[in-house]
Structure formats: structure tokens, C-alpha cells
Image 1 (tube, helix red, strand yellow):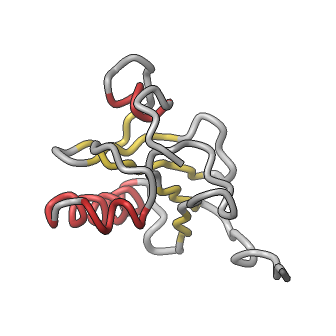
Image 2 (cartoon, one colour):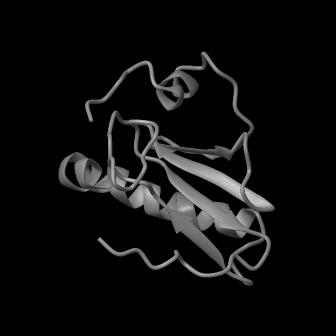
Amino acid sequence: MAYDPNNIFARILRGEIPCKKIAEDEHTLAFHDINPMAPVHALVIPKGAYISFDDFSDNASEAEIAALIRMVGKVARDLGCAEAGYRILSNIGQNGHQEVPHLHIHVFGGASLGRMINKVTA
């Protein structure tokens, strides 16, 4: 999957599409998902053009990596999920059902989220 500079998250970062912002810093943006799958459903994205977690972990600066991890924790705390628990998820590649070619981490919470995933066999 190649990076598409016109993907929805790149367009949000450029201000072409509005978002309901939760927090922002030099390297990251966090906002509410427009189609929430849980009472709390936020997205945390790096501002750099990274396709996936492996791309990000291989090419991002130490500052970008630290900022993304810190922002996930901040969002969980700010949205009231840290104490009761929450789930983070990042879909990567075709088998992971990644739909947007820009790294994004979902933060789910606000209710019991059930099992991690259903068992899958090859």
C-alpha cells in the first residue's frame, strides 16, 4: 500500500476536512471518530506521512514516536477511560483490513469491550 497524500487523514491534517479535535501537538492529532464503534472512539494520528506502524517505527524520529505513544495515553485519560480500561487498535495492511493508508490508532472505551478478537484459523 503506497501513501496517498489525498487520504482522509492527510486532508484533515491540511484543514481541508474538519474534525472534532481532542488534542494536538507538534507531531500528532487526536480527534473523535465520525462513526463511533464504542461510547468512546477516538483516533490518534501522526502528522507525518506514515502508512503503517512498521513504516512509522522504522522511519519516524524518536520525538514523533514518543509523541504518538504519549498522545494515546493522554486521550485515554482526557476521555475518562484510563481508570476503567480501554483498547487501542491499529489495522495494518490487507490482512489487517487497513482502509486508510495513513497510520492511525483507534482508542476505544467507555464500556466493556468484550473479547480481543474472535479466533481465526488460516
